Length: 164
Image (tube, rainbow, N blue to C red; front, side, top):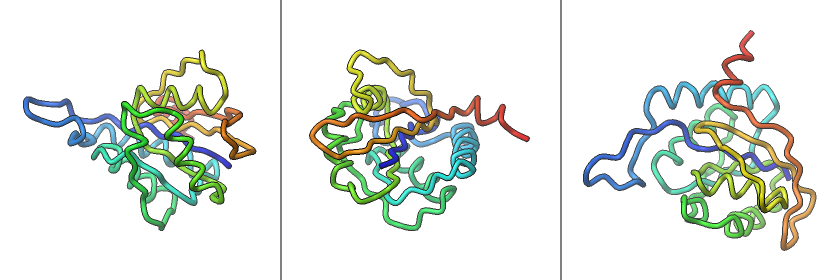
C-alpha cells in the first residue's frame, strides 16, 4: 500500500470563542497546497481512498486533494486523525482500507509526525511535517505493526522550486 500523508494547509488563526476544529484554510494556504497537489499528480498520486480528520481545515484540504488528484469517491472522516489521536488508531483505520493500493490521510500535527515514525517503525524519529506537505510511505504488509519505507516528501517550498 502507498500511504500519502497530507498535512492541512495554512489555516486562519483561532479567535476568541472559536473552536480549533472550525478553523478554515486561508487563500495562501490553498495556493501552496494546490502547488503540492499538482506535483503529486505529476508523480502519479491517484488515491483509491481519502481518510480525513473531521476538522474543517483538514476536510477542506482533503476536498482539494480529491479535486486535484482526480478522486471521485467519498471522503471518509474519522476521529483517528484529530491532533490528539494516536498513530495506532491511524494504523487501525488504514487496515480497514487494506485493499486500496493508494490511501491519502489528511490531518494535523503533532499526530502526523508521530504517524511517520510509527509507519517507519522508528519510534525516536522526529519529522517536521510542514503545513500543506505531502509524504509517501510504502508498506508491504498490513499486520499488527507496520514496517514502511519513506519514498518522498513534497513541501510547498520544494513544489514551487520545481516549476518549469
